[in-house]
Image (cartoon, rainbow over all chains, first blue to last red; front, side):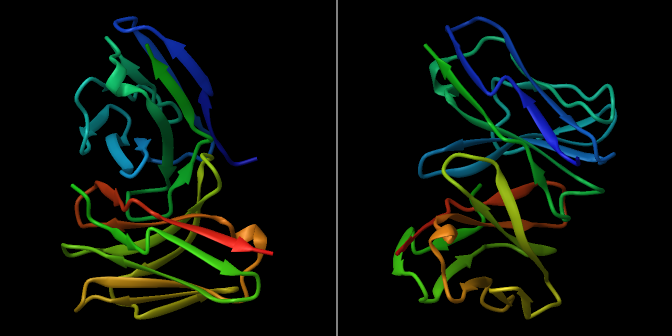
Length: 113
Length: 110
C-alpha cells in the first residue's frame, strides 16, 4: 500500500532533550516536506527536500534540522526542543515537486514540557 | 507567510445542503489545491486546479479559480455527515514552497 509513515505518533519530552521524528514513503517520490500545525495557524512548512542531499528552509525552520540521505526517508530533528515546539507535525511527499498532489503521513503529536 | 486564507472560518449546515468555502491568496500561483482533514488526522488531497483552469469537478466537489481576483471556491453539493471536517486551500507557487491557509471547519448536521 502506497503510504507515508511517521514515528512516533505521540511523544512527550522535556526541554533540551534531543529527539528525531522519522518519516518514510514507499512511492519513490522526489519531494518531501515537514509541516507543523497549530490552532488558528493552519499548516506551516518547516523544511522541504527536492531530492537526496537537497534540502531547503520553509517558513518556520528555526529550531529544526532535517537530512535526506536516502530517497525514501526524511527525518526531522529537534536538537534542543522547547515548549514552543509543542505541535502536531506532518510529513508529506509528492512525485516531483511541490506543485503536485502531496500525500500526508498520519501526524506526530509532540508535547515539550 | 500566509498565502491562502479561507472564509468562513467555520460553517454549520444541514445534511443535504450545499457548502461553499472560499480561499483568497496574495501572489502568483502555479496551482491551487484543496485538502480535507478529519479531526487532527493527516490531510487528504481533494482536488487540484491549475492557474490556467477556471473550474474543475470531482464527484460532489466543484472548484473554481479566479486568478484576476486571486480567489478560489470549493462547493460541496448534497453534503453528508461524513463531510464534517476541516478544509484547507494550499497554493503552489513557482518556487518550491507550499503555503496552506488556516482552514474552514465544516459541520454537517444530520
